Length: 318
Image 1 (cartoon, one colour):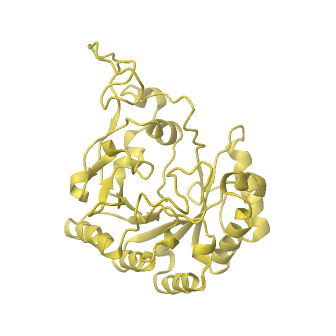
Image 2: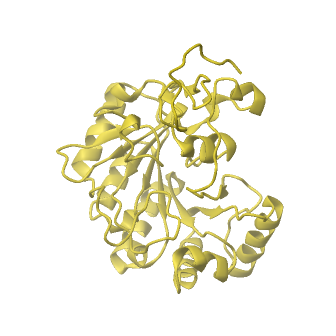
């Protein structure tokens, strides 16, 4: 690795945008094209998970509900600039708590984009009005509407260790509803420490077979297994030399082909950030428009290393 000729090395990891604590040049990811635009619908959620990637909860409103009109402005920019954006993803919090969710999703689908909604499939989604709206959108737009349900583990015990008592049964009820209705469906789980991926996929496959849920657990796009996140664990910094050492193509990382729109509480307008995991770190705030955001992203955060480069995590359905 190349060590920079300077004595001004940062004292702590992830504290300098260009230089690691060891004095090596920090890696960055160049923007390629906008394949996926994420919309954060707000950090309010019906539950509070033990290790929520974005720290959502029933009282956490630091990211406000974004409105359909605000989303329309970004969809208009995609159209005006003729961007080749395939997918618009909705994440939270719990997207079905946002009162404008169906207006936003239909705007996306009407324009010919695919819409992906990340949900825990619990009570907010299972309200009668929500179920009817989902059925209506499916009848009109078919498989262009996809839902990805968060099911942290195939066992009730380990899922509820993350999401709380009663959450497994509630999520399974929602998952069964989506499967019965024939929605384009995926599931997101978490890799547990000490459990091999093949073992976890086999466990999910048995659950899906038992519950008659048409999700292929062997398909990495249908069952997405995210790396376990421990914010206290030791994480290496990613240098420019790491691409070759780790055999990772920087163009494969999320920030090469995606951005996320957030509406911070108290701010007049939404902002565009580099990553679904980093809505609060202002060094990843890239501007108010999509065009402003199309610039390199320096991997100056532990999530960049742990989740994306080393963990191979990606929030996209691709």
